[in-house]
Length: 358
Image (cartoon, rainbow, N blue to C red; front, side, top):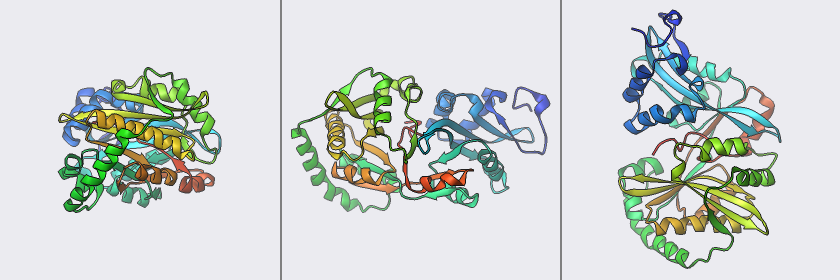
């Protein structure tokens, strides 16, 4: 049974890692279908190569001629002490159930840790325990925020309680009048500085980044190359909308959202928000603009991911009343920079794979 293009590289009884450039497409596609949800598997088949910037950054774990695992990395650049530095996001690890608990994840973990640059991840609860075992640092302070525009529809879904923690269903009915009041107030709110723009130039966003990034904060290096890859040339580009806020004659902030249709319901994700994070008035203005747009299009909810304590309060004040804990992990071979990762980070949904499929 041949699972990759060059039979001479086949090694029996020794688990080894091959990039998907050397793996037969029909075999890895079937592995996706067998080990991920249908939506996730289809995303990996259709858009996985784009997400990871090439199949050389996607890998299969092979044992005795069989594909028994998969994982990918997203090469990126980050600001590290005012220097553009290499990093990567580790994503989508899965191992066939038959081979779990046999140490194969440790093989993959070592493979990732030995790659150059800082290693980053947003793990689930199970993965976080494994990362800790392998001496990654795991932070528990990031938050996922939810604005339930339609509380009954948004909060009554079965998956809401697993995703956003233990919330009494009676709370839904407490929130309904509050959300209705906020929505009613926003309809009367007059937008001051923000506006939506069509077909933006990536230079607009790059300029906002270079004008506002804190040299001490570790964050994605938001240059033209990044915005072209992640947004303007994305396979999902038709689902994105762009908002900016102006101060005098320049753009001070931007916000990028994605509108997703799920079972005839519109869901909005805030993929990126950047600018002077201490200018709360303009951040509130741009968020209120997005909420007004969401209300007008009868969206069900808006979600956002935050690693910034400064932004957490702003989100809550803008009606993002529900939140749950998330995680962020990293492994840095250069321990001199670990202190910055422990305290000063800024990442959003659009930085990793948290917006990878509907």
